[in-house]
Image (cartoon, rainbow, N blue to C red):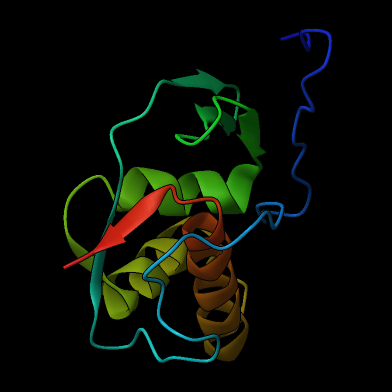
Length: 121
């Protein structure tokens, strides 16, 4: 997927999403999402191997989600808790420890939120 002139394409490696500008009405950084439910916004998306490419809703810029972030994206199609996201990562990456899966899930959700790709219940 090529970039159009004047538009910056986001690329994601190691299962994370690039940080952009936080949207309005966002909870402060460091806020726990343990009990919150999140889901992804309805945006154009395309699967490409183990990756998913989604359009940032504010400007349509493509955001490429690597394998780990793609697992999270697919799991948060409906309202989902952090625990459910960590469990989904366990199914996909069973050799990764619980603490690392929890940190990855929190970071991916935070970055998806920074890109305004998710909403909270």
